[in-house]
Length: 378
Image (cartoon, rainbow, N blue to C red; front, side, top):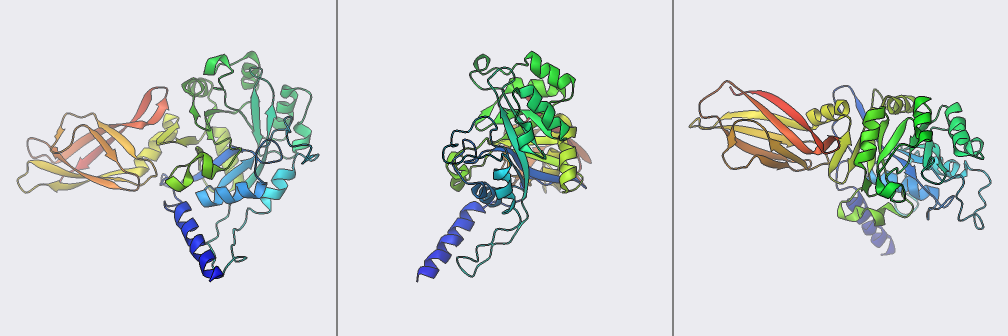
């Protein structure tokens, strides 16, 4: 009886955490999209969970790569967890990154998927000079602990780490306005700073987005999770943590790192995607698929099908000259769903051009991306 109850509870757990496909977005042709969270904490700094829990959360949520980024300087649990070796949280987490096997409980095995865990740190200094800085793909966290933050950043770069500025929108920094201080300008000029968080936890910064575009920094969105993602993001109700998606040639770790340095990323935050135009456009084209099903029998309207292959409810505004038979110019294509439209062309045509603004695909502050399609009607 007890075994059956455990089995039922496990099935419910799998259903709750696995309702949606693990492929969040359809990748562009001959590309890969890697889901990541590059800013998370454990009890080895100011988090409240053991490193293995971070691995389990990521596995359940379908994330393919995480970075353990505990604070170097800020160690509020040091009386209970001395943490003399700053690599320890990563060393624990990486032991769990190959398989999640629940055979210890019942004779039932969840399909295993490899999860990549990479080492990282958060260099923790007061704002605004320079604030908090993350370094991932590091080799030794202990070497990065220095007397001043710039020395730590230089040490991280000497390890060929990918370095980015955390939560520049924090309210204690110029009332929530992200601005470059002289030290940030110095790090950018000397290629010591490679990315910036445009999204952190539940905040989005248009000013940080502008800095990323102006300075050609990689655009990042992270959870900065300290508690449980299940609580903070209501995973059981269909919520999700912010994720950075890396567009790569392959799933090789070195390729993921190269793509980060090249700025080949976009963010999924709430029901939005955020990124540079050159990264957002191919994602839209591979995930919003439009086809014509020909004219109605009386040739008054063209039958159009729009399919959404992604995890985002895309909000479209039609920008063309035609009108719809049943819809206004504002259309929502549900995630993993599709809609049918009737477009009035007045007279029979061989081809029709359609243009939409994707309201929740941001390519700049208050700027949405547009997609164009040319359809043969018969």
